[in-house]
Image (cartoon, rainbow, N blue to C red; front, side, top):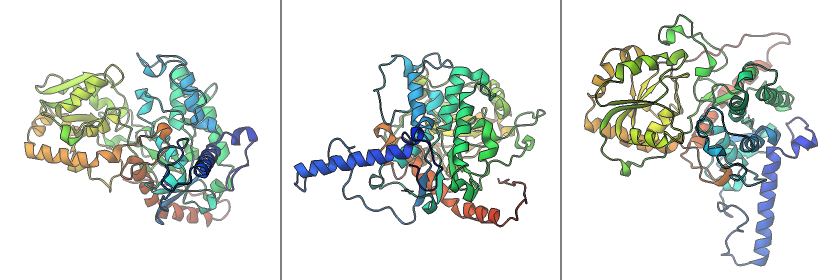
Length: 487
């Protein structure tokens, strides 16, 4: 049976949906605890081992200023079912070595309620969708650190979270049949996108708000590629706006003056979230002397605004104390990336296909001072963190001047670099999604990425409510063009 505020679904879909899993998990824990205490009446007894170790019988109530979130009742096939599909599939054709599929049929237990997210770096960097849903799927009494309170009635919610693993859906298609990705026929990702939107647009919650209070996670620049116009009114959690605009063909180096303005994304309604870092965190106490001035590892050739990267490469590749390496931190290049970032004072972060990448967050976790050369970049949680306190921002025009970057970086004293690194260490937890619990089900760190994301969504509520009220007062048949420009 569907919850109030959702469209009625068929038994075959609702029985496997995310909310159903949540209720089953909670009921199982409650029954286990009841049986345990009946047989062990001592007040000092510990919780039943059949429930997760994070259970606390005296969990405090959530604060009143939390964000109230309703979880749309999508079929399991559109979230955790996609993980089952991934683990049952063959190796990713885009990787030379796919460690996720090196041991067929032996790496994942059968019938796992909450399968792990892939370690495949092409997918793992976009895993925000997994950790955010894991927070909501954790029973409320164990979510003491979360800023979000899950409600069971859409009428009581501030926002409706749509639990579609849009990134994983897109990446599954790209890994198996990339040739049809931009097409609709024969595209399983498009079929899933269509299924999601047909479902949510038929709910009373969507009809009441026009989708303006719905939240989608679209960390992959190509997620929900075919239906972006339909989700444009919603709150979109994105890593940047790079996948949402194109550049004039006459663009010389990807400067902002050549950008065609877009109306589907905006800092007014959307939230910039971090990529998932791929390299382990280096504690400040573990930091050692750094022998290299500037380090970069990545692809030399990119498209759109990333054309600047190729020019930078040619300028810097032969500079003393600068290391420029081709590659991606996959299974073979990961150790090389760790060494390079941990032994360099600065890490170069030029624009790629989009203005940002997981490389920035790898640098932060490695305490390597980011040198950001990306005029169009948007950064996560700005207003909560000032990136200028631990990063160096360089205009593209300056960066392309001979010897400019190296000369500029050499002006920073040891005291300045130390101050940057200390501030960076302070903010490292803010960019961490992983809560350390199997399947992502468990308490989240109060100072982690998921909580900061919820707080950012909470900041959008006045704008969301205003836009809903403005839409309702329009006379029938009146259409006002969407205007959503903001810098």
